[in-house]
Length: 310
Image (cartoon, rainbow, N blue to C red; front, side, top):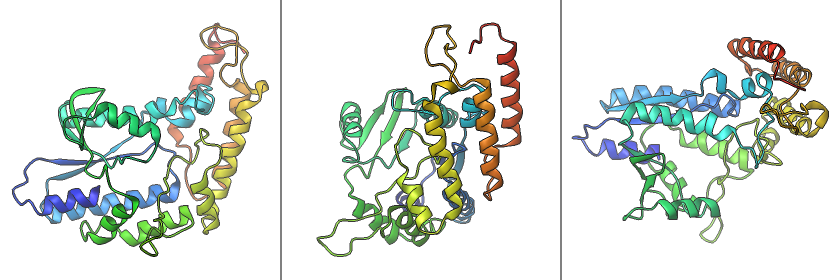
């Protein structure tokens, strides 16, 4: 999408409305991908300035109290499941919504790379919110905001044709991007012949994701030489199993009802110790100092709360 929008802005010298590029940093993105995105955004800012384009880059982040490990280790939230997918709102939707609201006050146009055919559920959502035009949709949370999806009918092959065929912005290194998708997919994002299917349809999510049974992207990256990701994958697998052991969970929920509740304080301490061990074995900071401080404060609150029962 960035390539298409940037190219359109370059071809419209009278374009005066500001375009804001929003990236959501959940704090648990796959580290090599997050590093690549940060480098790309820094180059994009400089390139847009050099081209005198009215383009701004904003990074959306969840507040510290909503960060993934503060929720799990501090508050004792179980890692997300299909039935309790608390992470989507707190890590992605809410931070992005706050940035959008600060930019357009709920009345702008959001350009998304959403495509039909990616999933049955997504197709249902698109059909439910489609406006008169096939490429414009309403947004449930902001009645005056419009979603524009210009690539809704693009195939994966069409997408890569744009990425590799459009020259600007140069900040988006098509070859590097193709390499990352190839490493995550195990194939190259090209069509080898006119009858062959395109690859590069993989997706990069959070390395901590326990909603899926197996993280194929991280697994493929490890096989392609990103060996530093192995401890992260092992931690994710361990955390998913740790969640299911009732001995690690309070027998009472926070509302006082009996049932599988949050992680016990002892379990949270085990998770923190395990994460610290992983952090020492990789070249990335996984848990900011501010998060650790808040985690200990939340533990103290639970110890002092008469309504907290294990």
